[in-house]
Amino acid sequence: MTNRITIRTQGQGLYEITAEVAVVVHSARCSHGLCTVMVQHTSASLLIQENADPAVRRDLECWLNRLVPEDDPLYTHTAEGPDDMPSHIKTALTATTLSIPIIDGRLGLGTWQGIYLWEHRRRGSARKCLVYVMP
Amino acid sequence: MTNRITIRTQGQGLYEITAEVAVVVHSARCSHGLCTVMVQHTSASLLIQENADPAVRRDLECWLNRLVPEDDPLYTHTAEGPDDMPSHIKTALTATTLSIPIIDGRLGLGTWQGIYLWEHRRRGSARKCLVYVMP
Amino acid sequence: MTNRITIRTQGQGLYEITAEVAVVVHSARCSHGLCTVMVQHTSASLLIQENADPAVRRDLECWLNRLVPEDDPLYTHTAEGPDDMPSHIKTALTATTLSIPIIDGRLGLGTWQGIYLWEHRRRGSARKCLVYVMP
Image (tube, each protein chain N blue to C red):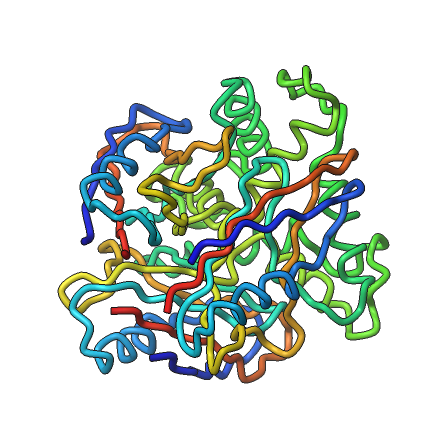
């Protein structure tokens, strides 16, 4: 019932994972239930956001980068690079787990909603998520 | 098991929806389980907050409006009005899904907790939420 | 199926509760399912964060204290002390509920993830959480 999906990221940004999550829901043959997504990292997070105008995601990323800049003299955790501590803060301000009702075999997202993995590190990596479908 | 509720908003602010969610839990005749609420929009969000002093909600709103002002030259997504991009950012910083245990047929909220829909657009609208009760 | 756990806090900070939640999962003898944690307060919150370098948590706390300072002239809700309104804002920016898949009888956390209760009040207290395990 729990599937692991891996998202390969290439640097900071929002990566849509709606299709990957929908595949798990579809293969579970669940008509009504609950889909929970969890990212197993603390420097990447999850977000449900607008899937229409890509400028929304760019502005979101620019705004959060300005709020949580690198090279802030406040940081003492610097051994893992200047982008690591900002990544932990950005993760704390967004979501690590999401729960989405399943209706008629489909994710109950609104028309303009997509599920995104938000990579906060400059250098991307293979990000693991758990997708759990409960019938 | 999944109910749709519609909240009509009149401009920015926190609208308590605890009673609307409780009605769904009650009608599901579920004594122990889990209630998941999801808002199907990306410019309105969900929040569990204090239901006692209304000044808490007013201060929350003023504080977030100052953190995420309109007319920020950073925004490139401006076609839907000056309050649209701030609304997406505010939604990203708060919650889109909430999961609340059900105990003895009631939402397991603390004494001072209420469930709120946070409308971020200046002009309100009919906001749709899903309420899923899992026994 | 729903357990109440109480965390005694001594002032602001991140208190790891992974072990307390794991005990509930273990005693439920659930091999695959979903664990939902909810804090029943509005001036303390939940966070999944790095459990390795304690500097990450210290920096997180310093950063959030700088973003949401006490004695901000914006606050009108001041009757409960100068740290109360900042605590509500910090709670709004982080999480009140978390849902974690259970795999092979264990919480499906990543290697470096821990579950934390974030106490935002200067004076700690006994914080109540619900832990619900759904098989």
